[in-house]
Amino acid sequence: MVDHPLPVATAYQPPSAKPWREALAPALDFLLPHLCAHCRCPIGREPGVCAACWAQLSFITAPQCHCCGLPFPYDLGPEALCVECLERPPSFTLARAALRYDDAAKPLLLGFKHADKIHWRGLLTKMLLPQAAPILAGAAGMIPVPLHWSRLLRRKYNQAALIAQELSALAAIPHRPELLRRDKRTTPHVAMNRKQRQKNVTGAFSVPKKFHTDVAGKTWVLIDDVYTTGSTVDACSKALLEAGASEIRVLCLARVCHDI
Image (tube, rainbow, N blue to C red; front, side, top):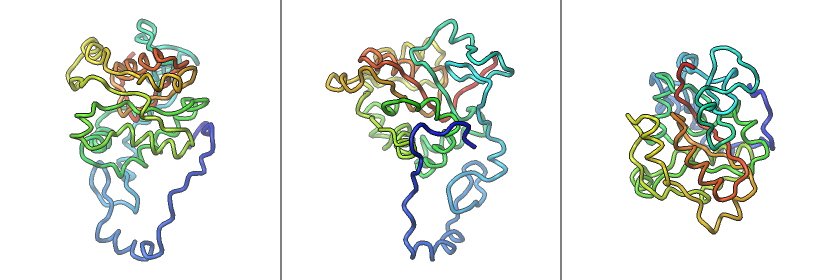
């Protein structure tokens, strides 16, 4: 399933259930079954999607842009770049996403982000694993794209941080959310074009001065939920590079795809 082994130990196992929970599990599964995140039909004992809906998910694989991970319709070579990366090279070195952000993936992503479906984080994190190995190799740690404090207060959780926590446990790589902060409450990017998104996030992120020595000279991985134009992760990358980071890579649950 995973083409490349993770760069560090992956022997993470969730805590075993207590005996009384195991005994009650069949009754609980009958009374309160998990429902498919897409079609809402009953499924097994773990949150996720049914087999039919799983088959509709579009996982991103090679061939793809060597830099931003945009999928190509045909193989252009091992280090081929898309037009956008050729014309406007991003501040990050590599970006990869697990899924195409389409009608099949949207219920998963939107439910996780806005509808308190935080119990899906384990499933979503596992979807990242096939893309994770080259991104995590040699990285000092993972940094979730931060929310502004006012938005975090309203939403109650940062979905990128939840994924980073899960992936940190699986890959045994530190989760360092304190290294990056959002200084400006930006306008939601819905209906904005690329230039508007770039302007919206300009100066929105920074690394606190007390953490500059932690960041300097190391490779860091940014974690986000959806890659649309790359404006947000590019702004985060610039802030980390200005603080002395040597390289920034990006890992997202899904990305918007377009024809090259």
